[in-house]
Image 1 (tube, rainbow, N blue to C red):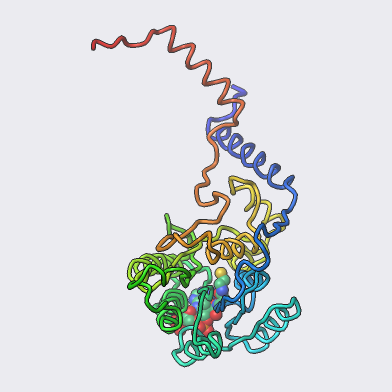
Image 2 (cartoon, rainbow, N blue to C red):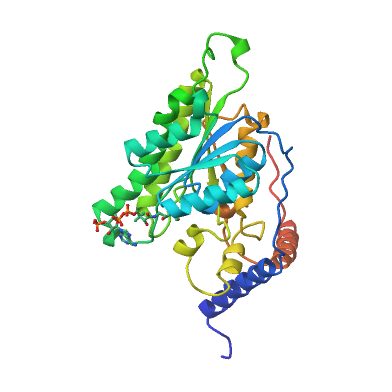
Length: 331
Ligand code: COA
């Protein structure tokens, strides 16, 4: 009598554990990440960023540009694309834009042509264009599933295939002296497909396909001096991913941050500076691999008890087991 039922005690414990994480996340100051790289580290490189007209893609284009690269951003909306390239130029970046859809052959070819310039050469292709929405699988139409597969996975292959001639390095496989400066494709992936994620059957399938393309092209195109890497971002502040996939409630960012082991959401620059690293000479032995940049978010599990309780309990259990005695080896 007077004792609360077991499930209520369990629920209270979980609540207090989550409240503790939430408070810790809310107390974390925002981070401003300064580039540790030299501003000319990508000088002379020509880069094409699909989906580079807004969000994470724009920040990737911006950071590549701020480190010396010449930039072309591709997006579907004329006005958004024009103002993105103008914003890049306003920061002193050599930038242009190409309007089109990564599902359409002519638009893909036009974007590559705009990016290569008279040299016909491309150094870095970043496939960041993507589509997603939340929907329970039983309410998702075949066309909805196919649309996201086409934009995400189809778009990655279309762009990579169209850029192949401009990316490949002549003589790479024949002479060691030609093997100095590889080209790079970066595919922006996700972590939702590692296990399973609610209401994103289409996007999970598409990102799993992208990771597979990253490995296959990494295997096949190293021969041509083309590296292929992926980046799997975690929850990134101030992006369509957050407003579309975790909409609404006040305090949502703190709630998300509380489920990230390092207790903060990612910044767009976390992803963009990873691109700078991969495109720099420090990244030249990386291919076929997808780098997870998520603060450990996809590993998250709520703790089973507070740390202090574990420390106390564990000592007690040990003491108890010593009283009982330990088994003696017969060997
Ligand atoms: N729930 C269920 N089905 C949806 C949906 C939703 N929220 N949004 C679109 N669909 C379905 C459509 O109903 C359609 O299927 P149907 O013909 O069987 O009805 C199918 O998806 C294609 O939709 P449509 O609007 O014609 O595609 P689109 O090519 O114009 O747009 C999207 C593509 C749907 C992915 C759109 O959200 C988009 O362009 N997104 C880009 C930005 C983005 O999402 N970035 C990623 C943020 S995480």
